[in-house]
Length: 86
Image (cartoon, rainbow, N blue to C red; front, side, top):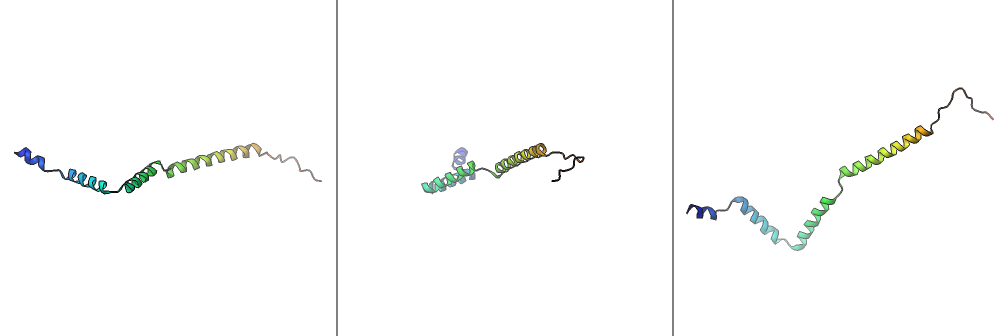
């Protein structure tokens, strides 16, 4: 008889799950669809971290490009030579 009594008593967790299931079932299809779309959009959204990494990479490339041409095109002026005067 102890087993029979134990089987009728439900755990609070199971009751809570059943309650949540009922609430979800009561929602209309458009609400469920909107919730699902919002969750998918959140998963696929680009994070700030990724945007920051891309911007940092572009900045590094631009600085390297600038440094290369600055060093390549800068010429050392010989102090012994005097500028031509017209």
